[in-house]
Amino acid sequence: MTTITMTLSSPDVVLKDGKGSLTASVTNGSTEAERVVLGAFPGQVTNPPSKTYATIPNPLRTIAAGATEQYVVNFDTAGASAGSYPVKLIAYSADDAPEDYADQAHVVTLTVPAAEKPKPPRPFPWLWVIIGGVVLLAVVGLILFFIFKDANVPDVKTKPQAEAVQIITRAGFTATTTQTESTEAEGTVVNQTPAGGEKVGRGSTVNLEIAVPVQATVPSVVGLRIENARTAFQAAQIQLDFRQGSTCQASPALSLQRCVVLEVIPQAGERVRVNTVVFVRTELRSSIVVDPGICVTSPRLCDTLTQ
Image 1 (cartoon, one colour):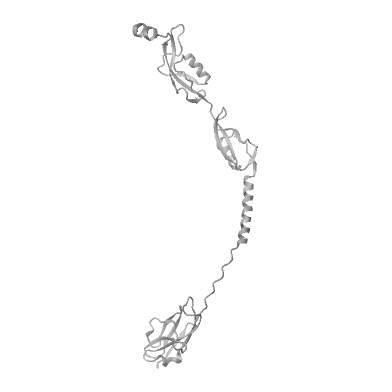
Image 2 (cartoon, rainbow, N blue to C red):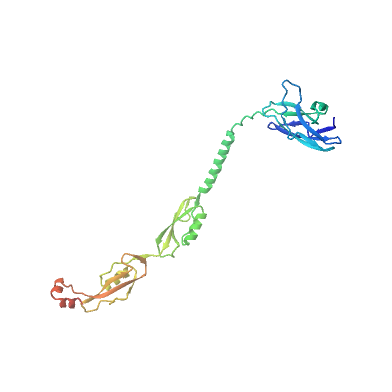
């Protein structure tokens, strides 16, 4: 019998999820190479024999004289009940029976822990949920109180629109704007609702009236004498100028002709700024009302009367 010795990394193996392993170091103490087998056998004599639950990859190896080989022994006790299971590991010569090396056997104890009992579910913390809800409502209420608490509306009259909107917004209000004709500087605030200094809830809407230039309506003067057209333009605060092609700027005195407006640009009814210049085109026409029948029977006379 050759001299074969073995040491284990641990005599006990605590399995996790039914699995574990250890390392067996097998040394050939003879002066010649030896074929060595590492075998796993039941640790107790039972009928039928108990399981070893062991798997040893490449159990038969040739070990050189004085050399050591590392064997990995894997254990899998899936399906086994909780408890301890002894397993014998014997390193022996392949030319001999394992019983010849029984005195060199190492017993490894496999421990299968009992399955942990599932912990009962924790009761839902309704009390803390209620307390948290009450606290949250209190905080939200306090925030809303300060947000919507009454405050004085800033006075932004005469300020430019952009600056006024910024002031109103920073004070916690919502700003809206409308346009109103005014002689004040264009783009400035001429009025506000609510008025400056009035106390209202934060978040309320403040309407700002923004000044735009005063406008006038172009009067309908086509077909009128230029004198009447001038009067209408003066009443509307609109300037008058004559377009190219106008044949007159006033009706001749002591004449049967009159200066009549033929065209207005912009057209009648359009809105323009006060003192805007409006162009008119005029021509001289006869002041005599001619019967259309005369023009048929006496064309020359008609031409004379309408010139």
